[in-house]
Length: 226
Image (cartoon, rainbow, N blue to C red; front, top):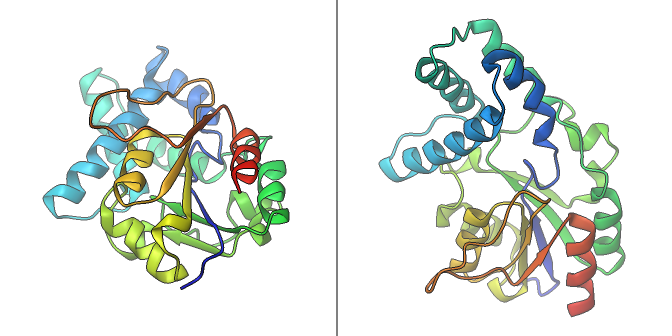
């Protein structure tokens, strides 16, 4: 079993800037906050279908939730809107702090992979286009196991594929639901807040091993611990 520290990165919002989608939602709904509402609902229903049994690819689920919000707010969401959303999500830019954070982890000898709810892109994705693809040893998607995070199957899949033991694995994610899932599985977790997220402080809920504002800060803190 590989004893090198393994860093598992979430992708959407952690590495990629989902605020890129805000103008699209503002144009359709003419109201602030709809993009965050949409994203929260996509995660809610991803978890719901994982608990209930069926599987729908993340992008298709996102389009369905967009239509659902249209029904709720009496806004006509068209097929073209759904296509636009798919194209925009594929073009989300990489956060400016990511490259330096990845470099710090690689220089320290960590193995780095991604684990995302999104399916594999048929061509170069945002990380590839930013020149960061070679920084990762593997790129995992839950589409392989047909369950979304934070289902334990998703973390088990990566752990087994990488031949790592739980005590050597860190998840870096911008979502507390993801850090809870990873820590319940025995991993350490760094929560990247990006100024819009925070830990869920409740008795019985595992708290992030560390909290950082961005990927660069998280990477430096993890390197310092090792």
